[in-house]
Length: 467
Image 1 (cartoon, rainbow, N blue to C red):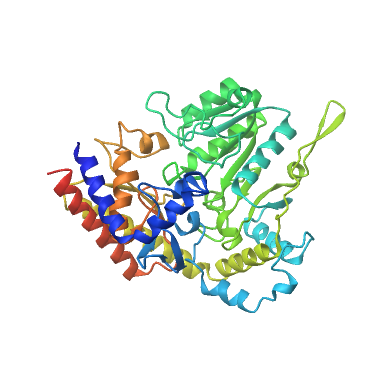
Image 2: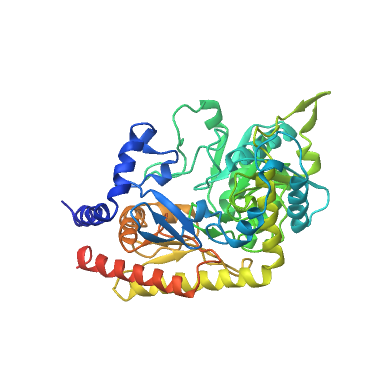
């Protein structure tokens, strides 16, 4: 048995000892749900703890354990779990007049649309709401294909845009094929042939790909701040080139800002770069903790109509049963209103907390003779970031794209994904992909407790893995 497997088993035993009720409930869940849950990422080895309640930076399990949480509702809870501003708003909210679904249009969605578009600041933009990031990105791609009459899609290797069949390629890294494989069985081969993949922040690769396929490509979809691919900001030159090339070849430029929207400032991160896409997918925190996503963009595209050979073809973007649910819209409006009103206090604090946590994590590992590199730092366009991911490089690695983050020849992916997560859980900290999202509720004391947990973990790694 190798050292990693020995450590993993020891950590599992320690975790099981403190989460006996969670284990019993998980066994019960396995009897009625696939793998015992409804989202694969939440089902880690040996089993997930079962949440009892969550407040601010903390989540509490059914065994009474408290964890400092950096998952924060899939990175959606920028103010922390159950923030006071939303609790206060809905404490007096009359459920008879809107918290239950009615299926009619309401004023709250107008207010949410107005504030979101106002913060983007583009003329002639419109918006349509739906309920998930997958639906938003899928609809944006369909609109692009309808407008251009083309079928090929260009995306970033390591970029995750939800479970739409239009985009389920090039998400997970394969040591042999890189980011070129399908992510799921059951996908039509025609879909996969139409998905092209390019390397994030690689201007030459983008130019080469579009030189060869530009006239066939309907859209380029990318995250201006790469999410689960590595928490990496695009360079200003890369986004500027993407805009110039898509205009040259008549391609629709789609920004996926489901994670980055309103995360770095009271708008999309695109406004910090000064690059205007044709369409943007928003989600997560624009719903104030509810199932809200949206596509915002140029009205001529969102109209869904494109004249083609004398007839009109229409892309179906009709929403769904729970689109623009009145309570969801109200929560989203309250959240964005609060972020806009308090931007000068919230965002600098988040950026400072991010810098503090990243640098201190790197320091505690370095003190044990272990090289750990955090991604999530800002750059010349993004002044600061509240996202972080801990990576363990194998040799000299410059983390500029998802290939560097997820290639097991360059980074110790298993140490980050399995061992670090479980070690931190036993220290009372919950992370995903080695880190996560800092909220406004993570104060200096919470940050220091987090650093201490990483420090204990670094000491354990040195003792067991690097002795």
